[in-house]
Amino acid sequence: MTPLGIGFIGSGFNARFHIQSFAGVRDADVRGVWSPNAANAKSTAALASKLEVGNARAYRSIAEMVADPAIDAIWLCGPNQARIENVEEVVKAVKAGATLRGLACEKPLARNVAEAKKVAKLAASVGLNTGYLENQLFAPDITRGKELIWARGAALTGRPYLARAAEEHSGPHMPWFWQASLQGGGVLNDMMCHSVEVVRHLLTKPGEPRSSIRPVRITGQIASLKWTRPAYSKRLSAAMGKDVDYQKRPAEDFARATIEYEAESGERMIGEVTTSWSFVGAGLRLSAELLGPEYSMSWNTLDSGLKLFFSREVKGKAGEDLVEKQNAEMGMMPVIADEAAAYGYTAENRHFVRAFTRGEKGMLTFDDGVEVMQILMAAYMSAEKGRTIDFPPRGLDSFSPEVARGKWQPGKKD
Image (tube, rainbow, N blue to C red; front, side):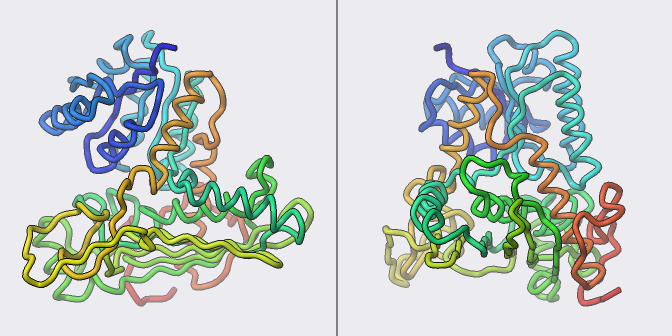
């Protein structure tokens, strides 16, 4: 079978993580990269060649890459504020005669519900097979844990009734993430999409559609716990540039939500999600739990089987060679030996390569991305109102969070 030729839009941290994962994906080659930063595009293309996952080259434009017969599918990994523009370029090239077998988009699909629906509509206008990239659903521990829980515990004692998921670290790499007007919000919009979909995935019976459970009530909370403190906002501006000023233009660095679901049988379930840019630990921590009548499961990426210890005499350079968002270089620290696999990127990309190659619908499409965005915006809406709201609330399609509009004041309640 001819390998699926993949082109990347975007050349940053996330695109590089995906490219690393393709070492474990058969029947696909990374053949192209486009970025508004030509030097970064060349560097990221060179990484693909170095890792021997494809003889990639940098393209001068999205249109040029999409029109190249060597490119069969596109992975969208650019910043949120460029999402619609990037998808419009892809669709324009397809309408001009280019052929694509699939379009995959890194989370979140967009910055709000209106933009998410526009992205989905654009892709549908040219009949593109789409994939919504939520890597944590494909993490081996999540996959195997769900399989065993439902096959053994739920089959004998009843479906699970409580799922928890969290993603926490000390803050993102690039300035645009910290700018709510560009990114679409703070940590809730950036990362809670993962936890929302993990919870929904765990509570859904294997083989049944996601529509078999539906959200009915949502309670959200946002806060700035660390980065609006004067010393830390000053440090943040020094690291990210003058456009990031959390004294004047703050965004939330902590968010949580409780989502009440109802199954087709009428049974009620609870999903609890938490996300943070104010977590200080060894590095990125992903965690999840699933509880039922006579069983439970838990997952924590920092519960690593491999640990290293460095004394205070080992004074090396700061880096992320042990774990993503690494916060220290000495002491007892966990090591994630293969982060791309452990976090689900490898299995995720393997899945969507197969779906696009075979012309099949993948586990997650842009429609799922829209549904996740609806839950996120409802959580923002609840946080602004200071109360639990029924789902879906009125005005969700046109809603934009106060954080994204520069109107949010930490600690203020409407």
